[in-house]
Length: 154
Image (cartoon, rainbow, N blue to C red):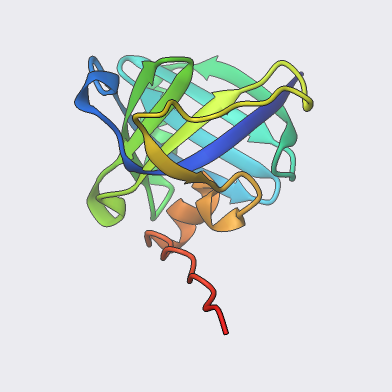
């Protein structure tokens, strides 16, 4: 078992230099509660079980045979397709198909008390505690969440 501590950001602008040498990922969910995910990245495949939560979650991830993962993905009606880039201590997921245009940056932390900030040349806002941005919900609803409405001053 591994405890995952991560912060997530919705990115509205990222310079191209952060998005080099990405890996295509296809993933789907056998269950949403608990979260049971099948993922294929390149020639590797994984099954992952995650507990509920936003900032801190238990995570169990195991490599499985690629052919098993392909078969399990066929059992799922909805899938996520994205390209993953690793750069500057962040993971950038650029989504495709129904989620085209959505970019999420994640930063895994060593502790809950660690602070993380987006580099100055990246524009975005934190969505760690917004369940609309959880991959399971992106997969389930196949819809890019709308931007938060700005409050008006009186």
